[in-house]
Image (cartoon, rainbow, N blue to C red; front, side, top):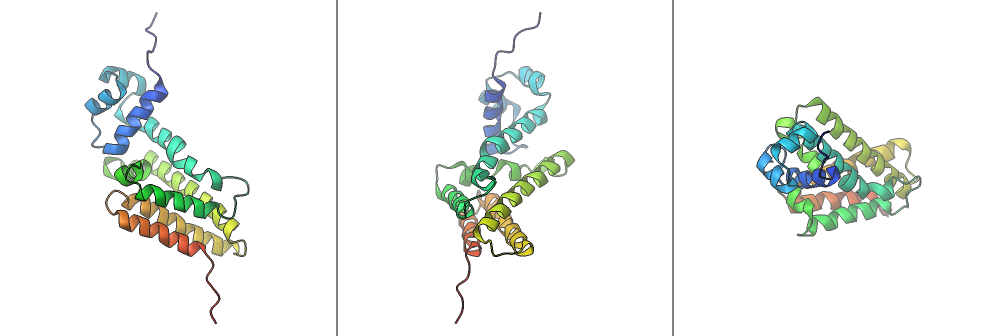
Length: 197
């Protein structure tokens, strides 16, 4: 009879997620992952197959528990007119909070799109899917805030806001002021311009 697994997989994945988030995939070492998870290298390999297998689980956890919950108000059937502005203001607060993970470690999903995994087709597909989820949420928010827009106008603004959010997440570790500026630009674009006289 085999030995009973003596760890909770979700806890191990969260602990590994934090290492990958802080260090990046390439810099996260097996000793660091062992220390964070409390498991031996053989247990990690037995449970997840490889460092990459563990990373894939950690990335899924990050998307499910960190990235996508930020979008919950925008993923409702009928988002409130202020839902997108609230989301952007929430991101801005994170960017300016020294205790937040965002200015310290950035976005794990976007960070993983560079380095040795950048050309990996499976990872690229996940990042493209994540951007599509961001875009869908931004589009729902734009349509709620600017119901006068036709489809082309709404999609154009949603694409711009999505790209500004991605820019902010990407810049957050190296240029906090630039990241905040991206969010402020998105907020300004969301508001109707005053009629010129």
